[in-house]
Image 1 (cartoon, rainbow, N blue to C red):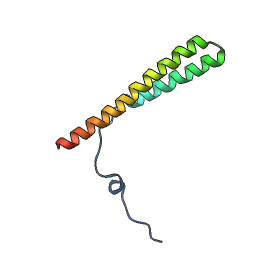
Image 2: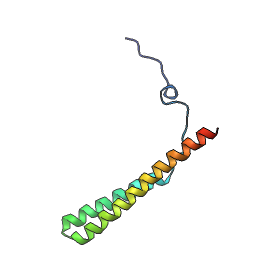
Image 3: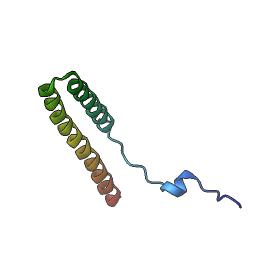
Length: 81
């Protein structure tokens, strides 16, 4: 069986979206707060764990908002071209 000779540009399209460098930073920050909250919970510091988990939700929401905003801006630029 012959394999098709497709390049990644054919599969993914030749469109290049602008990447937002704040998204990976937000993901790492979310992970850091999550790990800190889990460690606090395991140590028995439930108040601190609760605060860190609430902070995680805020970081996670901000990261998702950045992802959606970047996708929206990318499509708007595409439409104007």
